[in-house]
Length: 253
Image (cartoon, rainbow, N blue to C red):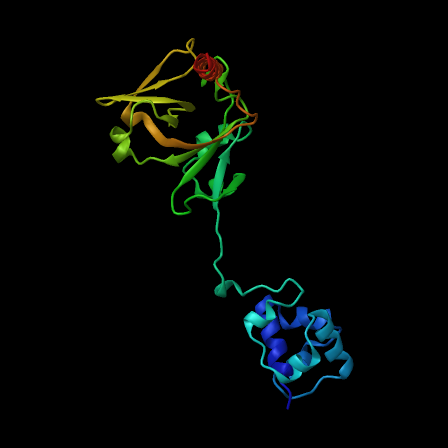
């Protein structure tokens, strides 16, 4: 008796295919494929040729050798290890607050079903932490040509109220306070929280800590545009270059 049935079952498992999907691929009935795998029936030569050619397996190997996973990975057909036999990479799914859903978020931020229905970003970051994405909608966090502009996206990590006072002053946070979502720098003194914009013409906002409904510390930023290089830094680099060139000329004299 050949090893055909055992080998096609191995191929199916490695490729994560159902019996029906495998049978459809070679114009077989599911019951016929099951009979092959269980050794209750032997295939026609046409079927053997189709399967062998499809996976670039020799007929001899398919019928007389017990195929291994490593052996199968050398064959074409985009064979891959079963999920349980390979490391599966998982991304964090982050609910995103946009201009369109901000008003609804203010009313339903504690509703798990509403949060689950928000658009999401998939990112390769810690999947065990709680994050929220927010689309910037104003110029409060700009300073000259630097900072966060409308349509930029920030990713904030949830901050429990028990650790508010442990945050460093100057951290950028997204705060849900009263009926507003505010993206600014945080400054805490005693039981007061001040939210300060980078834009010099925007006044500070100060609240009692118990007025904060949610707080997210910004961890990542995605810019809609490529940020301009710092002009001051460019000048410094040019001066350093000129100084080096001057020293070279001086040494030659």
